[in-house]
Length: 279
Picture 1: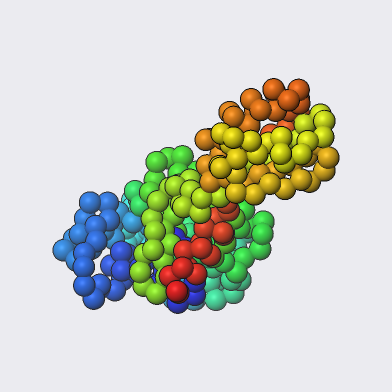
Picture 2: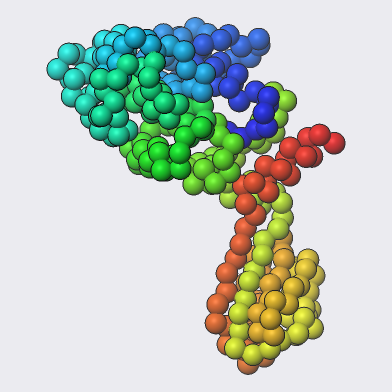
């Protein structure tokens, strides 16, 4: 989930986690109503927030996980194995005996994520899971999230990192001023901009007139010549143009060395939706 500061991302995540009640409307998580089945919702989710205040400062990392694991009803033997596994997964083994009050911001973030994984829930809700931590730790956390996806877990996360959204998300929601402007697969959101760039490198020089001929001319929004034998064209839908373009180059005795299609970035999509919402 993407949105500017103050858009309502954290409020939304708190609501579907049953931490706060909605002012109106309803929501279901893992098939459970957040107002009528809040206990079942809480049992089926793993939550990690950016406003963490529930850990006990005088307990160490291991003891904190042990406490919350007991609340989840995990058996003592299984809990010990699970905690050791998660401490290793998040590279916190050396800090397990360190009191929480002495944890760095990044270590606190990791411990919060480890707690979310304790009971192996079906749904994970992460509020900016890689904010305020170093790049190496951020990449480690992204790898863990991808491994959860591979296990068919449902993951709902908020982020300001467009690269992260591009890497992790199958579907993206764009929130602004408390309203969800769009929710769809990344590919479908990118098509809304109606802009794709076809980059071509050939063995001989070429002019725009040789490309922009009948049958394809009306589909080209912009032609840019990069070098004598390199050019790019901007189109709404590359799939409607590629075959014709390749055929025209072939008929003009041009050999294609490379051809690539670039779609809009998630950042471009995000900016487009938010700017249009302000108009």
